[in-house]
Image (cartoon, rainbow, N blue to C red; front, side, top):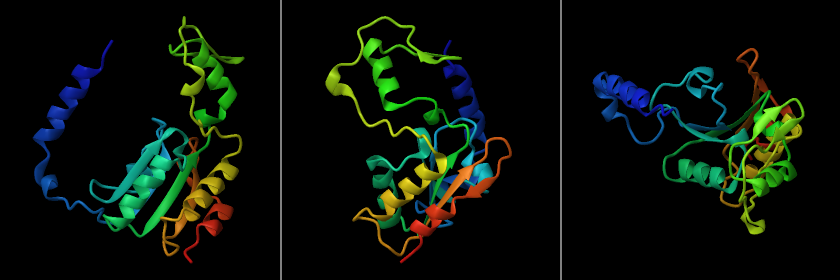
Length: 192
């Protein structure tokens, strides 16, 4: 069952009360960007106190510093003037529940949605699956502190990222809504 009707109805209500939002400037008013996970339990606007137009929010599975995420951060800085960045992963992340080998195996069996049971993910679909050369680096997570630190380091060391931009590392606790600093990551990301 599609949610299309619900989405379009919600959009209509939103558009009716859109007000002066069309006048918001293109650059983010508060001058920062957040790289975080796509997990539906995270609402960066709420946990970071954002309103529309305040900040750039870049989301992907795990909130990882992929090439595309770094591309977005560089554009955020170079063309739209952000001066500070946050990398925010979270507890109980789905990216901790599998490895690259697991997802490769599931995709090799079929392209259908897998099921999560007490023994992990299992494929319930029928082939064909992915071909050998179709795989990417899934950037799975085995340790949250390590992954936040690794991502901040990857961004910090990228040749297109200026040293003067501070990059903060945090883990969002899904059980409390609190941001917990990862000191190792923030140290790596300190402005130079």
